Length: 111
Image 1 (cartoon, rainbow, N blue to C red):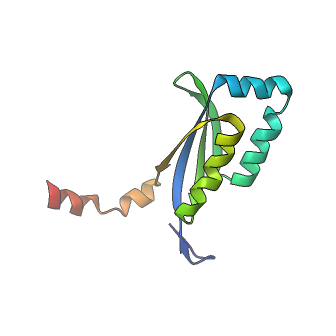
Image 2 (spheres, rainbow, N blue to C red; image 1 turned 30 degrees about the vertical axis):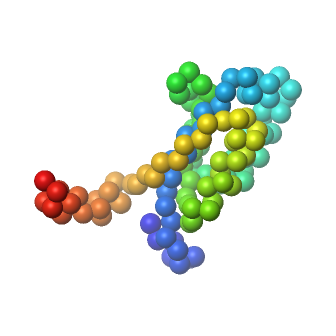
């Protein structure tokens, strides 16, 4: 997607954060979990964030926009440092963006 205000292309990503029980439980126990999570999310400024369970671990699914690849460490490091979390990045698109992908032409070429 193109950001008209900044004149740059932006990539929407889904970030999946899996938090080990021991680090999260320790933060709950010492009373720091809420402030750590709030600080990370305030700095990340996600489009959306959802809390869930994945593979038996506490998890956060975050939708955010990337203007450049060099933003990845700023998104991941707080989770690594605060919770020793496992972080994955996946490029995602809206139905409208998928419609612009030219799947019919790709299919015709590679079928």
